[in-house]
Amino acid sequence: MFVALLMIAMVAFLMATAWAAVKDDMADDEADPAKDFRQNDDAVKPETLEGVLVKQLLDDEINRLQYRRAMQRLAERDADRHPLAVPGDS
Image 1 (tube, one colour):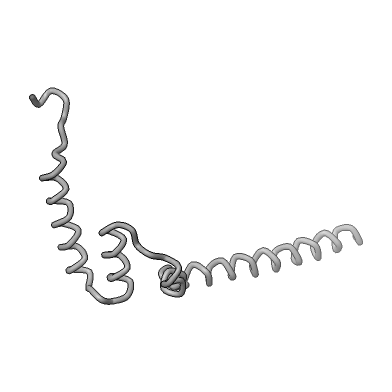
Image 2: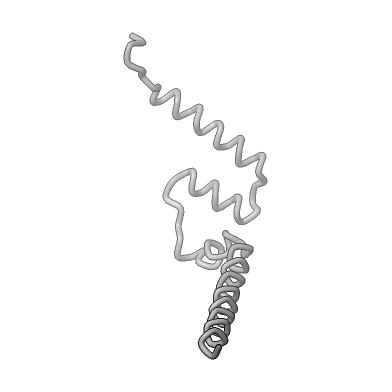
């Protein structure tokens, strides 16, 4: 009987510990994913046009529509400069 009560207490303790860990992980998931990027603004310098656009989007300098249009123009310009050659098309 003592062993059974000890096992139940140990399982309850492990469940409480696991629940606390899961709860902390869920709180971390709800955090702003761009928060670290914004805090280290000086340490992270974008090196590409895509990076500059993402930084502007995260800093609310441009909205989503402006970002999508800029990325579309960038993709079109890239397709003109470096067309994709599929084998058998020539």
